[in-house]
Image (cartoon, rainbow, N blue to C red; front, side):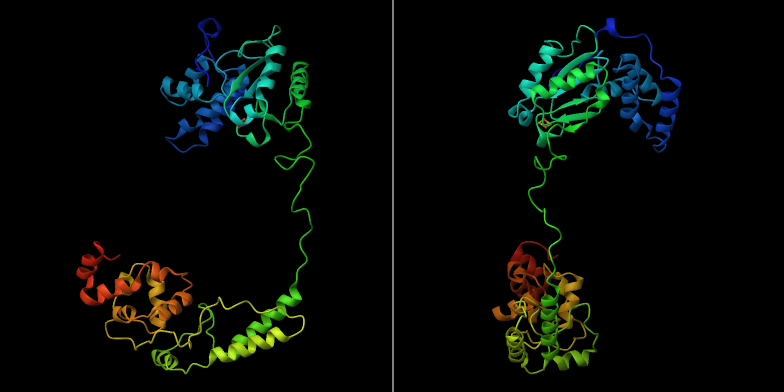
Length: 375
Ligand code: FES
């Protein structure tokens, strides 16, 4: 990165003023920002000053600072930070910024700089004899995927070869820069593969709706036949008495479900149902025993991993106390974990150990065991 300083005094004009059109534009631009935030217009105003005079002069920096009620040094900092601002006179038809950062360097930016040296001037920031062209090396301009590249004005020219850059420079020098199409200079669209897409070229895949539909219907039939619980959202509200009655329902579902699954598999042309990754059955033998809601249920949210929603679900399952959770065996933990779709989190968070501590001595015991307060 080169040191960026203002041009020497001999180049600096005595004053700067926006022309009428740009002055009106600047007023309008400043008004876009909330009261007290007009300084946010510093970059657009500096850029407009550069577009008007070709580069950012000291007088322009001071003018913009006065317009935005900023210290000169603050505007100078902005102007010297961004390489998009030219701090000295540049070519009147093109100033070529060649990216020399690693991806572009590996892909040939040194060759591009050689072209600039031979066609414009051996040294960056020096203009050609006619004063129409200049160049510099800059850091990454964000088009690395199409390296090597250059920026001229607000446009980038990518996937360059030395030969193509030479043509572009000649075109700009002839005053026809607008005729050069920015972007990749090879047969590719933006950063797509050269020559066109190489993947996802098919039309939308044909849907296998009929088979899927039948399978879905079959799976639904299976659900209907066996007392598998509906989804959380569709679960009807039940009274405590109904819940407790359901807790005592004998276990018959797995066999029925298996029979139905087999029947589905045997239907010709019907896809096999999805393996049982769904919620385990409420009537499964491994479901932890529930109890009726006590007068003062424990605050299950003290267990790390249990929030209000999970606590509500546990209550629906008849789980109200630390002692119940503390007594869960492995199969029961797995059942609850599957029911909550927790993917092993109950054991990872060690609900049983937490519940044991809370059941034994509340928060004090929890702190003794875990060295911190429960959540
Ligand atoms: S490295 Fe050249 S554009 Fe990023």
